[in-house]
Image 1 (spheres, rainbow, N blue to C red):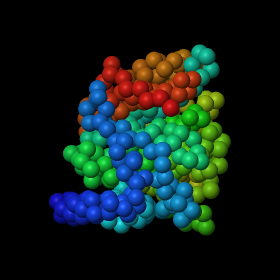
Image 2: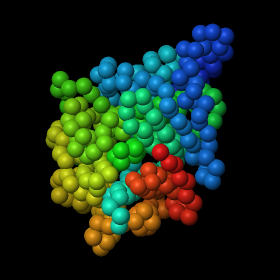
Image 3: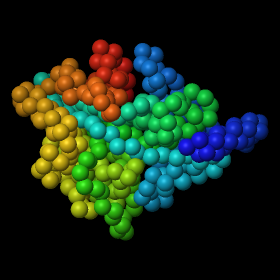
Image 4: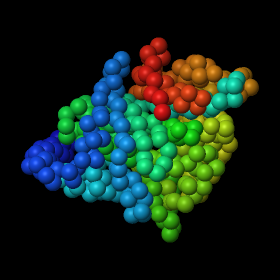
Length: 351
């Protein structure tokens, strides 16, 4: 690990020197990246939580036109070429989150969505993205998936430039049309590698695609069907997807096929297999608790009730614990964040 970071740090130093040299004229080469990096700031009221805005080109359409990527390594190669212009190596992974999702309608018929992200040593970055031809969105990235270290934060210039990769590694997100997406680990089986004539996407780049282009669950499923989906971080995943109408599904990858299951609650096992024990005791308990809350309220939950539901299934001890919780309210297009199990401390991000 030390050898790797010595190499990366030398790359950062070289990159910084090059930017200084080019600043007199050709530094315009990096103006889009510099604009995104300059927006990064640490949020007050939360420890080690950062915010970033992207309302300029970050090459995602170019990424899709090039055929996407079938692995984190291929995503890293693309980012190195297009964002760092080859001056330093950008690496991304997707470590496996053990998480919980619940989707409901409030009494007024507006969509409310909640998500716990359970992991270890995260460095959260909230990303507000406004693409030229797509929906504005708010998503959350774990900077640890980019640096492979819980100690590195995007405060120095070089790490801010590296944090631009967060746009390609969202763990969850919500767009202005009301579509909500979350990546959850699957604790059983494995995503079988597929190789058809379709272009490729990793799980996290698929989330970025959906946030940019899909308004409904139906549109999201249709988009995913146009690509070969590949595991990230060497683990299996499924996607919890909900929309403003209250439609809610788990998109799963079983025996090389995409399977769509209608559900308002998702944890860490494939619902298509019908075996909640496959995800382990914790995943099973969290799933049944969320179902109990949802069914007890007849599917009608206020934002406060969703927050309370998340707090009841939050992990507060052990190796993996809740890094962040989100409650999204479609009527106000507001994302309410609660970090590290502190449900009394709210950070709101509005579309």
